[in-house]
Length: 277
Ligand SMILES: Cc1cc2nc3c(=O)[nH]c(=O)nc-3n(C[C@H](O)[C@H](O)[C@H](O)COP(=O)(O)OP(=O)(O)OC[C@H]3O[C@@H](n4cnc5c(N)ncnc54)[C@H](O)[C@@H]3O)c2cc1C
Ligand SMILES: NC(=O)c1ccc[n+]([C@@H]2O[C@H](COP(=O)([O-])OP(=O)(O)OC[C@H]3O[C@@H](n4cnc5c(N)ncnc54)[C@H](OP(=O)(O)O)[C@@H]3O)[C@@H](O)[C@H]2O)c1
Image 1 (tube, rainbow, N blue to C red):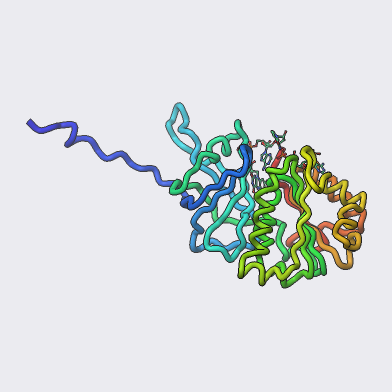
Image 2 (image 1 turned 180 degrees about the vertical axis):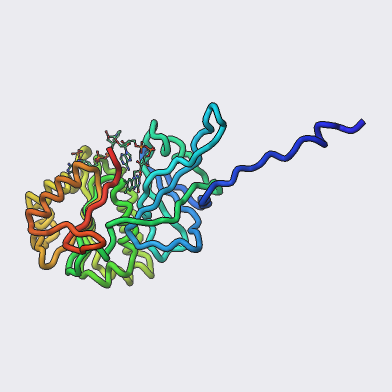
């Protein structure tokens, strides 16, 4: 007698992800932060500083069994010339996406929608001498991209990254990246000593402390770095943080005489949300 089950059983369909990108590297920085790299789709072009929608398939609907993509906006943390794409992510324990995304491993696939957009691009600011990058938390991600882009160093004499987190460990991704840029043979030649790094914490002892906003209004950062206060003739800004931070720093930049620009109308500074509350 033949084994009927073996004859009638069809091979199970393996669901293929739409816009799938294979994970090539995962690094966990703290219990709340991780970064990962994926293969870059050959046709995907973007400007350093832009964001895309990425995600995973949602759990099957309990009634229909159908699965829908669960997507979130993510800044591309790698520069536009890189063959791989890097992302720097929060882990929200009850977050629909990141409660799952934090468990991805090398060889897994994510969904990567190939439609990059965003305002944190050099095209959206007027030429200037000094570019300030103001970030809190994962808001450093678009600057991780821009800091590695030769275009930024061609356009500006000095680039200053101010990054603030609650704790020292949350600064590590940015710190290591700056260290890498300054020691890597190719990147250090492009950077040519133009990149300055001003990390601060707000809730753990560190050699520099305080909110980005407070260090600007008190003048402490200008004193510490030995630079002139912000001037609309020479200084340009890019902002990426939580909503309250963005609002507060915009008022400060406006106070220094800088104006908010956009892709369609470049001015002295641009802003993007690092996440939606
Ligand atoms: C333009 C844009 C770019 C973004 N880029 C990034 C990025 O590069 N890296 C990244 O981790 N997130 C980024 N985000 C946030 C991201 O889209 C998701 O919100 C995040 O991945 C959490 O998804 P979730 O489904 O797990 O939880 P959600 O339901 O999306 O969020 C739950 C709550 O977690 C908090 N939260 C969400 N994201 C963050 C964060 N990044 N830092 C601190 N708290 C957060 C908020 O309080 C939010 O209400 C970006 C958002 C926008 C609008
Ligand atoms: N970071 C953690 O250890 C931690 C742990 C568990 C849960 N969470 C939750 O996760 C969410 C995001 O936390 P997060 O730490 O990633 O991001 P965050 O709350 O945006 O804080 C990041 C940094 O931005 C500063 N900041 C916040 N608002 C500001 C403003 N208006 N102007 C200037 N600086 C400002 C913070 O300073 P201050 O410290 O002065 O606010 C902190 O140094 C929050 O809801 C938080 O409760 C965070």
